Structures are given as C-alpha cells and as structure tokens.
Image (tube, rainbow, N blue to C red; front, side, top):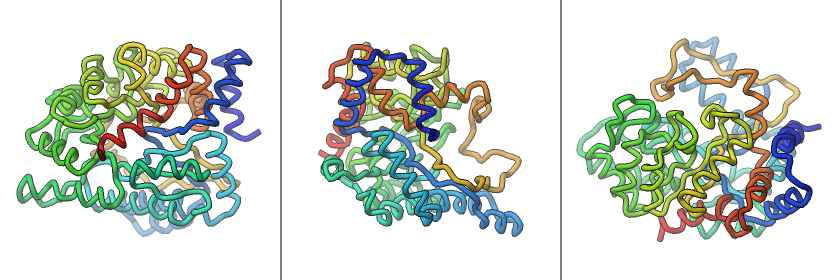
Length: 398
C-alpha cells in the first residue's frame, strides 16, 4: 500500500461518509477544476551527496538550502521512477493547479530568484506532466488538455537592498510579475517595511509604504496575500485595495486562536474586496481535534457565515515522493533564520502525525467528499475547490 493510500484510509475512517456521498464526492472531484490556493508540488526525496560536500566546506545556510531545494525540485527527477511517482501522486490527489510557493520567505530578491528558477525550470522540463501557466485563461485550457500547471506566488514582496525612494523600491513587483509571479505575501510572520506579521505582538498594521505596495500590486495585477500578516495589517490591506485580497492559507479565527487565524472582522473585510480565505491543512493551526473533520469545520464556518464565494482550500502542503535512499537533511544552524520566527516551536510531534496525515495533500478528493457530507451543492463545491481561486486570478488581471 502506498503512503497516499494509507492517508486515504485514515481520512475515510474519520469522515465515515455514506457510500452515496463517497461515490458522488469522488466523481465530482474527478470532473472539477481543482486549484490549491497555496501549496507545493510533490517533491523528490533521497540522498543528496552534494549537501555533505557543502557541509564539509563550511557552506552557509542559504547555499545549503538552495542545494537541498534544487535537488528535491529538479535533480531528483532525473530518476524515472521518481517521475512515475510524481505522476501517480498528482493523479491520486486529483489536483489540476497549485498556487506554488516559488519565492523564499522574506523580501530578498536574490533568494527569491533561486526558488522561482527551480519551479520555472521543472515545468519547462517535465513537459509530459506540466504546461507553464502565467495567465488565468491558460489554467483551464491546460486542465482540458490533461496536464498539470503551477501558478507562481512568492512568500514576500521583492524589495531592493538599497532603498533610494519608495517609488524605486516598487519596481521589482513589476519585474517579478513579468517572471510569472501572480501573488505575493505582504509580510512573513515578522514586521517588515510593509506592515506587521502575524507573530508580532504589536499588531501595528499596514505602513504608508505598504499602502503604496498595495496600489502597485493592484496596478500590475498581483494578488495581495495576507496569510502571514497580522490582523491589523490584513484588515488595512483589504480596506485600501481596489482588487481582491486573499489569505491564501489561514484558518478561521472563530474556531482557532492560532496566530495564523483570521478574525471575523478581517474575513469580512477580505470578503468586501471579493477575495477569499484559503483553509490551511496544518493540524496545530486548526486546533480542537486537528484532523480532516476539523479542517472541513473551518471551511464550513467561513462558507456559512461569509458565503461560499469567499472560502477556498490552500493546503500549504506538499507530498514527498518515496525513495529507497534516506533523505539527506541540509546543514543546520543553531539559530533560526530571521524570517522563520514563530510564536510556538515548529515541527510535528508523533501524537499529531496521524491527525496531520488525515489531511495530507493527496487526500484532496476526501476534502470534496467532506463537503458533500455537509450538504453543499455541486456548484458550491466547485467554487470552494477551485472556482473561487480562479475567479480572483481573473479579476486581478481584468
């Protein structure tokens, strides 16, 4: 039994759908355009000898990180068996497009380009699986041709290291748009020049420069993403934007007190822009039972209270393809990087792992089944599992 088959059984045991709901949900999922509002394509795994060489040479964090990511995103797919596993994972998940995290966390342009280059290259290289997508109209056309697509997002707004003037600092929003990026995080956990991140106690909101950033994103056609932003920053961004604002991978504050949860006030402000909140499939964020049922609860909460047009699924998940060779972890530093500040320790404890696996990325078909169980119509479900994300992409570039 494959890992994703194990995860599927685990999810089914928790949901316990009727045979009718199961069959209908799986068929609906199969025939719908499924768009993950924020996630990761299945990544290769295995031993990366280059990491040992870098560690022996005293390589820094960023060099080791790039080596690790390049291997998992590209080099590992030189093995035909890994490519076959990649295809199988995509098909089992029934996902057609991912808003792909393709820019390193923070505002550093050079680091962003490294990850963006990896994901651009893999879609150009594995052409029997992928077609590159840079405009919304291409997404459903690619789906109809039976291919998968990645739509690029970055975990920050690219800002130059040398700040000459606010206007000049905005130039790289347009540059990265031309490179295919269609959504950007305003902040990533910490405070930056744009506003406060979700882990800052001050909750200071959007800066004057941040308002300029939003205006430029609206002009160029980039979606402002407040998933990692503080509540006041999220609210301010929605209030000053002329186009949809999203929280691509967050949870409902009415059900969770996690720092990544969005309050009802923020969700209402996002709704008023025409945007959505994508529910994140990380167990600790969900709280309570922390499994696939609670995950559906968060979708249900926003859909019932704010409307089915304003909720999506942004798993923030990927799937590590199996390898007979153990994975090699990149060289670690004792201290966390600046941008990866969290309000609680990272990692998944053994007791949480089964709950986490019940909402694995490959369990996407069961997300649809869970919505069928809750009584949503087919049209409503199509919006939640992809239609709302596609609509926001279209409206942003209208």
